[in-house]
Length: 184
Image 1 (cartoon, one colour):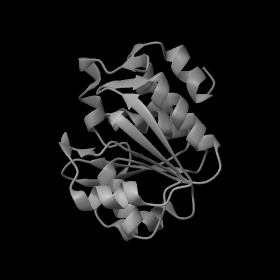
Image 2 (tube, one colour):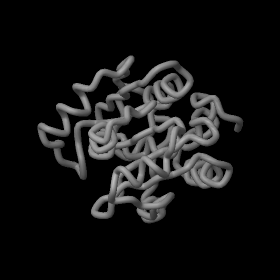
Image 3 (cartoon, helix red, strand yellow):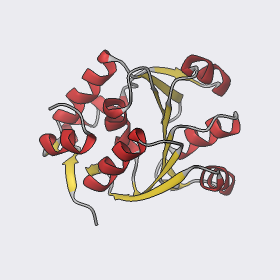
Image 4 (cartoon, one colour):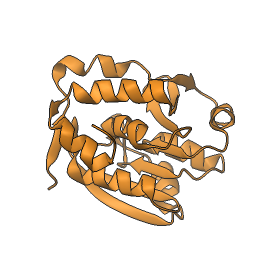
């Protein structure tokens, strides 16, 4: 079991329901907006749609679940059967970010090739450290339940928003920044 670095307080849950970027329902339109920038997907269904459209994310974060239920067999087969350059498996309980997940995310973003980050637990909060640690100009895409796919271009504004939300979580923000390799 990996050490919990930060945990989502009840008071912050409603803030995280607001999309952090533009919502797309068409994968081709989404990928046009992403362009050739490095792409980080967080979520099995989003990753599935991106792979089915012919694009392999630089980093795909998946937990074999969608909206608290197991993903269907087709989604699992496409996401987990895809030929990534490497696969990292981490533990991350719901409503937390663990040292395991944060270290693996930083490693995947700083490495070569395409990485599947398999989360035993829940990957939802990985969106925030992904925005913070991804290179300038990258894109982070995640699912907004019942609405579509959210595209977050990584820039100063999106990083400030992610940092603000992360700093409001309970736990050790200094350790979080350190594990991601970002300035405190």
